[in-house]
Length: 116
Image (cartoon, one colour):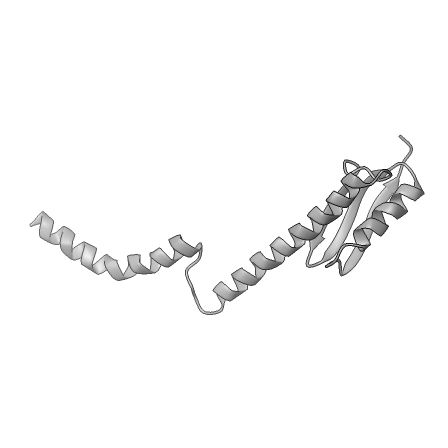
């Protein structure tokens, strides 16, 4: 009797569990337009991360700007620089390097100049 009840329960749950398989395999179950929206958001996040990485690489290679002094945040191609730099010259160079990266739509500098 218990085995029969278990079999019936499993048969009833099978359609529900089949929908869960999509969520496990892809990370989200396809529900209308939400899957496409999630994919677009993931793509944008990767693109923003690539921009931040390229800017940081330029700072690491630059003799004037220290990658440790400048923090980089990117959202939808809008780059925000924060941190303390030792001179206006370093501030201008950090901005110039960031603007030169492909994909930067806008740059917001919140850098402060402070003697060390």
